[in-house]
Amino acid sequence: MLPRPSGVVRTSLVLLALCATAACGESTRAAAGRAAADSARAAAAERARVDSVEAEMLVRVDTAIAPALNVDLAAMEQRPSGLYVRELRRGTGAVADSGDSVTVDYTTWLADGTVLDDTRERGAPQRIHLASGSVIKAWEEGIRGMRAGGRRILVAPPSLGYGKAGQPGAVPRLATLVFDVEVRRVQ
Image (cartoon, rainbow, N blue to C red; front, side, top):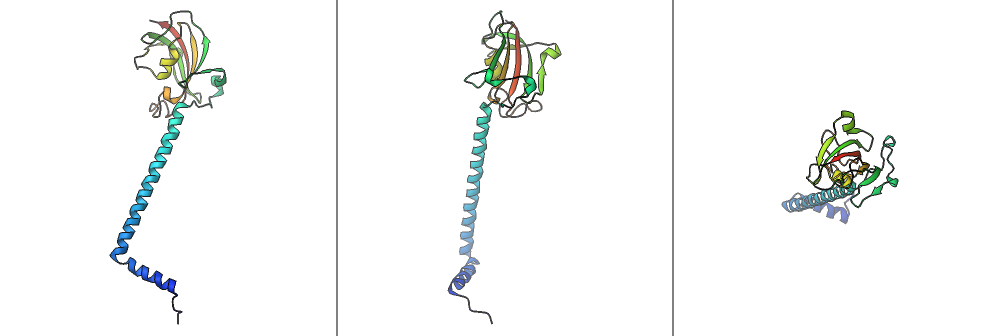
C-alpha cells in the first residue's frame, strides 16, 4: 500500500487538476504571452547592442594595417572626422578646393593589404569633381587643400568610405581604407 500524500502534495495535485480546466489555459496563454514579450524585448536589446557596436566601428580605423603598406598611424595627423593624413610631398601647383575638378593617380588598399584599385598600374589617372558627391567623403576631405604635384597617404574609417554596407563584391562591410593619392592637375 502506498503512503498517503502530504498536504503540500495534495495541494499540488489539486492545482494540476485545475490546470486541465479552461482557467489554467488562460494563465498558460498569459505566461506564453509574457515569454514572447520578454523574447521580443531581448531581441530588440540585442539589435540595439549590435547597432551600437557597428556605429562605433563606423568611426574607428582598423589599426591592424598590413605592415607592407608602411602606415604608421601615430605619425599621421588625425582629423576630427577620423581621417588620418600624412603628407608625402607638397605640391607647388594650384590648390584643390570644393567645386574643382582634379586629376589624380591613386592606389587603394584594404587594411589587410589587398589592392582594390591602382590607376598607376592601369596607366589611367582619374578625373574627379570635389563636392559633387561623386567620391567618398575621405577623398572630399583628404584631397581638398592639396596642390597639384602633391601626394598624401589617407587612412579612412568606414564612415568616410563605404560605410556599414561596404561595396558588394569589392569592399567588405565596415572596411578601413588606405589611399596613396597624388594630384596631377587641378582645373
